[in-house]
Amino acid sequence: MRVVVQRSKEASVTVEGKAVGSISRGFVLLVGVTHEDGVKDAEYLADKIANLRVFEDEEGKMNRSLLDVGGEILSVSQFTLYGDCRKGRRPNFMEAARPDHALQIYEAFNGLLREKGIKTETGQFGSMMDVSLVNDGPVTLIIESK
Image (cartoon, rainbow, N blue to C red; front, top):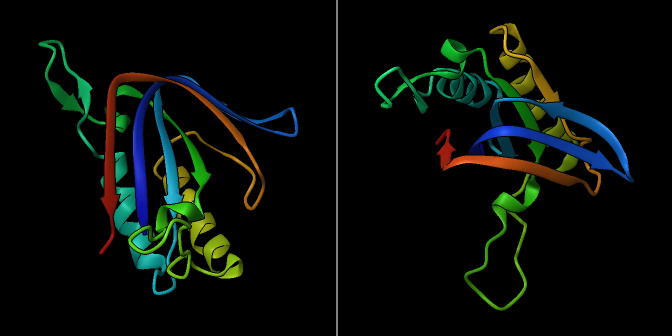
């Protein structure tokens, strides 16, 4: 699994003009799944992201986690994270998981975040989405389970 983590002040996702998810302070997650990913990958990333210390403490140092600050998550499925652009001019998406497998792992990942007590909103899997966010920092990280 590959996740782009963006610290945000607020974020939302719409599908065909209808809001399907929104959060205040927290993370926007762009989530990609590949063929060999399983629940263990989702568990690793959910734990890593929930405890990632990228929010400022009283001294202005990145020392607090999403759990510490009561942050929220907007999780958006993004198969294009596995686009290979090394050859030609059009990305190859052969490394992206098939939709049925990706959906299963994506839903498990979001469920694990919710089990940790984190409000987790989502986009709409497999749809064209408009994602809006106010990037805080900006702080953007890429985390992989492998």
